[in-house]
Length: 307
Image (cartoon, rainbow, N blue to C red):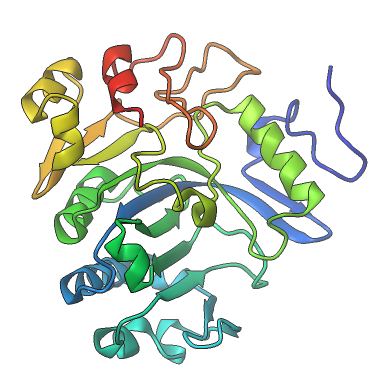
């Protein structure tokens, strides 16, 4: 049996409830959360920037009081928030921002380096990258139980956001929320690997590197898999995809559809094989696969969606 390194949590053997938040002397390193990622083009277009601001407004209205950190839009330096509007927001500068790369970051936590289950991060790539078809990204995070008692559930919210932004592709499900100051430390890398070994339904993201390759196609599949019309056509068209889904929900939006693999996302747990994930995703940028004994996408659909 694998043992934990000194001073590090035993990710392989610890009960799940002890792993929802992982904190060490370096602060909060991980939080298991519910996340949404949208990869889009057109970062220099006003309608895309307005769509991003619309999504940010929704997120602010849902969890804005939990956001404690942002960055200066010019220098990138961290700024402590005393309320969402206590510092300049993208609503102030993005509508009049000229051509060029742009980004903004919001997240919760006591320290600016802490992982947290409240986060909203956007990168709009520079014009030359956008003209090549490279994708920009928007992602946000929620506590895993955030939508349980809410009337509007996450799939409907994502459907609305996709209708506005019209992403090329994206996904949503359980994520490993990561720190902002120790991303490449040995401690973080080792623990990420152990989380991935144990929980096959847990997304482990690296957006700055993922986005370099995702113009080729989707990273993989998840509980919610978002595909634009062009990707649906590569799969045989929307009606064919609905047939392949074999009764699982497909949520249309203007420009694509969201494929939903079951009623709820699931982590899976290799320590308890009876708890299979709804969808498991292979390492970044490789082909996705359907987990053993789970309800989810047909293997034919998944293979044909691979880049």
